[in-house]
Amino acid sequence: MPTSNLRANQLIRAGKALRRFSKGVFYIRLTQRADGDTQQVALGIDPGSKKEGFTVKSASKTYLNIQADAVTWVKSAVETRRMLRRSRRNRNTPCRKNRSNRAIGNIPPSTKARFQWKVRVATWLSKLYPISRFVVEDIKAHCFGGRRWNKSFSPLQTGKKWFYAELEKLAPVETLQGFDTYKLRNEMGLKKTKAKMSEVFEAHCVDSWVLANYYVGGHTKPDNTEIILITPLQFSRRQLHVQNFSKGGIRKQYGGTRSMGFKRGSWVKHLKHGLCFIGGSSKGRVSLHSLSDGRRICQNAKTQDITFLHFSSWRKALPPLPKVSGLRAI
Image (cartoon, rainbow, N blue to C red; front, side, top):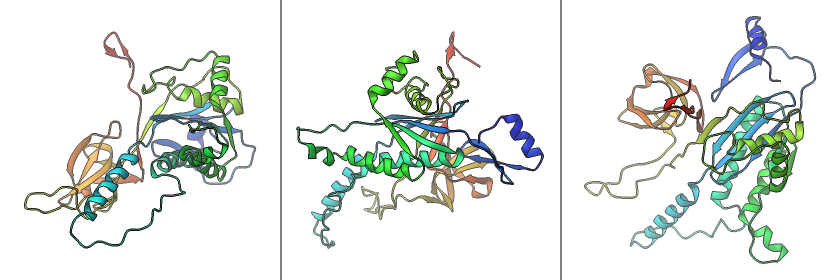
């Protein structure tokens, strides 16, 4: 169960707990089993097309608010792959026989990738908190026509059913409609900003907080409005060559998830650049990237100067501080 900083430090000094970090979140692991009742902890999830909100809350406290970027690049990547595959088949070169369309009847790759991202975040939080209920704002699929069977053919409808089934493996799932969230938000006097891309609590986490509070209760106003920003990393699959020829008609190798023995996206600590994550590799060196904005710090880091921390498929950041009279607030 979540505890205070004072109590956590006391357990560590007494040797009853160990210090641990998981993707930027500090927690302790007890060295001996502790008996006792646990509180009801809910995870509120507010899905979105560009941004999403996650809130971990009990009746006594709001523990974590996360605003996550959605996975939006899969559709264009699949279209590019299809275009290149068809262009190769039009060439006068040997090729394998066409396979049957394996995508028929299944969840489209772009839809499944969106929901797989939500499942990864929910699984990660379930390992840190004893989540007893998932409260999700149910998204409505836009179906054409008035026939009942048409709803089952919506990729969004199929995807969310798969998503709920995966969450059920972790804890019971409860869904609310969008108008229910709107009603709960108005009863508490909370406002949701129209700037959906802004990095503030009122953008998406206000809805996820309302959903979690609906199940556990305990507050009439948010007691914690601090948020953490996480962004999924986009990895390119290993290819035989890049799309275009290089000088001399040679196609270079491209893609993969390993860089000089490190898994790309892993959080590491460099002697000079500090905390960062692993990018690509070239000529026996690796590139390092910033966790806050993903920009490349360097591309010639030596492996012996790097200390591995843990694996990760996303980067984490804090929202920028508000500006006061042209200066950043401290």
